[in-house]
Image (cartoon, rainbow, N blue to C red; front, side, top):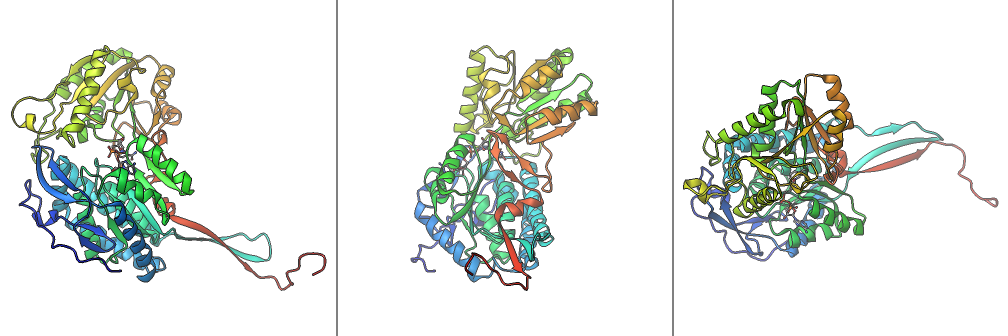
Length: 512
Ligand code: NAD
């Protein structure tokens, strides 16, 4: 495949925050070729200062076609789709090791782009490295099946690659969400076209460079940052995209599900949440306080599984809520590069403002503000996209603030009387992503875990992840499952083969 000669890449100004300027080259990765995107310039902003640190020219809908054709061609020409699984797995292992080796470089870049703390971006990077290695091990040890014949045949069930997979990701956990999609899709023998978010495009491009260095055939992976409505939608609509895996908001996901239905194309959707965290009077209260704080305020609440609705048994409600607000107030707001920071800036001032508006509306509708609730107006915090940990109470579960995803550091605390009351309130949500249960009674914990509408339940812990454990969103929180060994199978077509073993002629019809 040839492309028109491209202008030399522009190396942008020295990167702040410890990230390397060489990782901020104004190039996207289209069909195995690094070149300046022909789409609009995307100004990428450091959320801790509000300053533009680099401009990246994004992709266009035309690039989608080039990338998809290159993916199809490369999967076939390089032999990736038909390669022995242990050879494919070896490449994925090398990618995982390269990600780990470049952990600090990736983390610095991601902190610059998203504002997240370095502690978190290092953890996300290691999660990505482990995901590549896990999917390598998974594909290498997966078997097809020799099914029990019910006639004179040998019958087999095998799996084969689907073709080119479209992977669309949000800005809140790049590298980890990239790996969660790209690793199993490649492991299954596919090509991948990734569409990272406009607010945080850089880390996915760096991942592609590491994949290339690790020996992934050029053209098998494309990375096309750009607006969702043009580039993302062109990807979903493309006739040669065999499957889309999407993580993002519920409204976007629902729209993409309609587009997928028109093509009869499978789509996996990991969407929003409004997850309940439940504290019983018999809980280890110190552990519960820490877990609830971590569940909602880590990642500045920009987490699909944030424990944003905190249900506390009425007998301990006042004391627990007061202590929660007191501790939330003590959390340190600051830049992601500062090791003392608990709560880093939000992704962008525009997003921070939408969070602030939702809190203001809740208070105007009668909620009681126990802490936070005001955009900082002084010092460094005034220039970055900061919003303080906020605790609200005095509303019922029917309130807008309890029903809509805020995607920010905002907890609403609600009382409950008994298990029945709790289940009714907790399940009264369009979402069904996650749930936390804090109690010393494991029978009760198990009963609730089995009754609650959520894809993941944590008992006496919260927001813990393991790549070997599947992740599913119920109701408006998603469609389909990611992670786990079967993730590889989510990117495979199943095929049945019958080998005839009969000596008798195959006769059919009266005259034959
Ligand atoms: P978003 O839906 O606005 O965007 C997600 C991605 O989709 C981006 O890359 C965006 O450019 C693209 N996109 C937007 N419109 C599109 C369209 N019409 N066609 C194709 N692509 C399009 O979401 P966001 O604001 O980036 O992310 C936050 C949301 O993601 C929250 O709702 C959060 O709960 C959810 N999320 C869910 C999970 C999960 O695993 N369930 C994980 C992380 C985030």
